[in-house]
Amino acid sequence: MVHTPAPQAGPESLPDAPSEAVSASGRPPKGLLIALLWTAQVLSASSVIAAFAQADVAQHFHTAHIAWFGLIYSLVGTLMTPFAVRLGDIFGKRRIMLALIALGLVGDVLTALAPTFGVLLVGRAIAACYAPMAALVFATTRDVLPPRRVGPVSGVIGATLGAVVAICPVIAGWLMDDFGFRGALWFVAAVTAVAFALVYRFLPETPRRSRGEPFDWWGGLLLGGSISALIYAIGQGTTWGWTDSRMLGLIAGALVGFVGFALVERAVTHPMMDVRMLMRRRVSTVLVVTSVAQGTAFAAAAVMTVVIPLYPHIPGVSDGLGWTAMHSALIGLPAGIVLFLVGMAAGLATRRVDPRLPWLLGLALATGGLLLQAFYHHNESQIIVTGVVASLGMGMIYASVPILVVGAVSAREQGVASGMSMMLVGLMTTVAAQVIFTIMGNSSVVMKGTAFYRDAGYQQAYIALAASMAFALLLSLFLPKPQMPEEE
Image 1: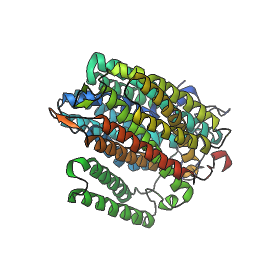
Image 2: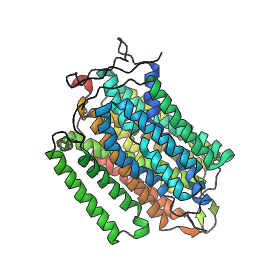
Image 3: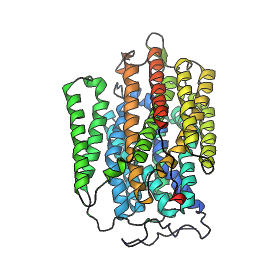
Image 4: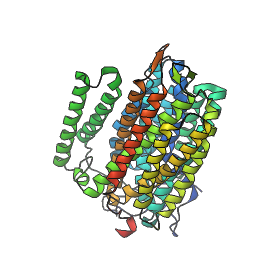
């Protein structure tokens, strides 16, 4: 059945009323759930498949700057997020999601057709327009679902990342081996097109919570620009040097921008983001620990689990395993299945237990798994076993994050909190990925314009990732108990 958009809510509407798309029993239609699940994972699917294409892209275009294949995505996506979240409140999230997915599809097509590395980066930058999708989806659940279902559905949406991690590498492996990296990039475009169709058909329009309010352009530009400047500086670290005047100037400019953003938000009548929300310990603690943990996990998945298997084995030059993409995907499949099953179980379990419990256990297991991977990543059996251990923890982490964020804020703040969470995760992923490439680069060998990495760099990078996850675990000991919607 096709669900027509719900009537637009005026300023006087109750802000927390669920959409008419939900039946009287409170059970959301399957089409609506599929649209939410699929659209929330478009970014993840794109990232996983693009990560598998990364090694071939670097060698095809003979570039030692392949890190920008992911960094440009984070840069533009971070800049877009505050505007997308605020525009969703003003015009309705469905309209904004359709517009951004359409732009992202244009970028995907340009990326797949790119004749040069420069054009490919332009395509990736345009494709990053759909980076705010997850933030908009999690905010939408609060608008279209009854309060008692927001937490469980949010947990399931987070847990479906495990399905992406399990299935997409196999698809990417088949496409890479039979059609090359362009085949994999065309599949990304297809995934985006399906997301557009699902949102158009099944997702109802959400209430316009900020109807008639002026748009805070200065706040959005200062926030997005500051984070983007910081990401760009980090991305150029290995090229410029970490003490270069340009690097220090960008970081200083970003800090000034953050201060300016805070001052503007406190002065305007309708701010892009209520900075007073971030001053609450419940909110700030949740956003910091979840961004550190997710950023570490995403960087590990996007870099380490792809670079080691797919980079060639060249004695004295490269200590990659030289597997085909399909072989690598099949070896990683057990870890992906475990991540999905554990994530689903953890998401459902949070209906009965404090979500902090699976969160803390997940961080501990993920830390241990990354440490094991530092020393055991040299053959199929080692990668399977250590990957499964890490995935036990990652599944719990991915399922718990949206529930922790939902439980830290009120319904009205959900969109802003989700947007801030996505921006911080993007920032932390960029930082973690750049640290990984910097560490590996210290023991790399450049041959024919391509950087190849040695085993010492792989080991040190995994240890750094484990330390970052352990830091998130330490901070998480101070997490307050989430306040779920039905408890408000």
